[in-house]
View (cartoon, rainbow, N blue to C red):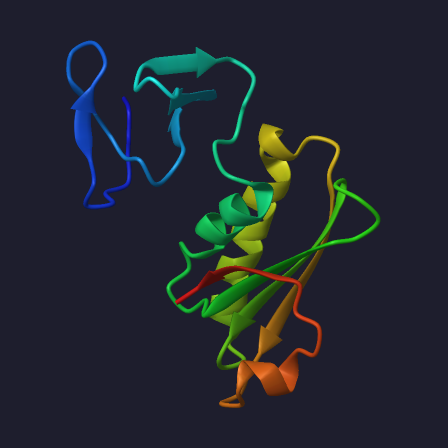
Length: 142
């Protein structure tokens, strides 16, 4: 079954008029599907991103409703990523959900060979700028 996240710009394309979102990469099992520049479906057994790694990580972490922001920083090239997930309050249940998303990212074939340094920051009501000095790339913000 093909799933697509709605962006408001969805359209019918390809054989059988499949609903596709122009916003989020779409997966069919272990197969990634995407639109090429001519609006045709392409498929690959090897996972392939249509967005950068930072954006993918941001989307993945945004599945936890309590996540307020995701910051990704490249360390020593493309194979080492520091991911900082920002939540407001210290809550073990929320952290468990964040850790599950982190595991999903690490287990993804898309990030084969990539090392991660994950951090969860609880703002405790403080502005994000007061907590994080050099934030890296803001990958997602609620």
